Image 1 (cartoon, one colour):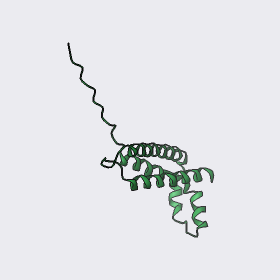
Image 2: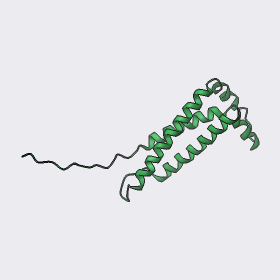
Image 3: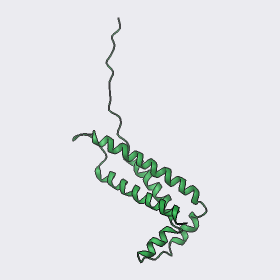
Image 4: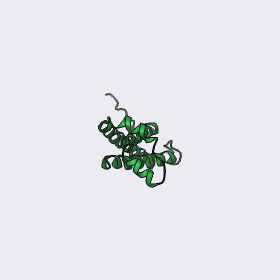
Length: 126
């Protein structure tokens, strides 16, 4: 009779911090391009900052606005999913485990929030 070997259970691999950061940066850049034509100049002028440098960015991103909107939304959603997985894994990591540092997770969260605000502002102020 054959012996049945015990099933080895390995913990799931930790989510990559670089994937979350890259998706967040890509979404943030695309959201910046979307907001460069209308919303960002209004925001910066209300803060007393010059916006002449945004003319070049707006002229390049305006023809591709729809594509940038879709890309920014997908990239920010992907970054949020990866961040959620990192948070969930960090809760089970333990004191001696290898987790994504809290500073990286916090910076990713701030980048996601800024990206979503830029994306919404760029979508609404057309």
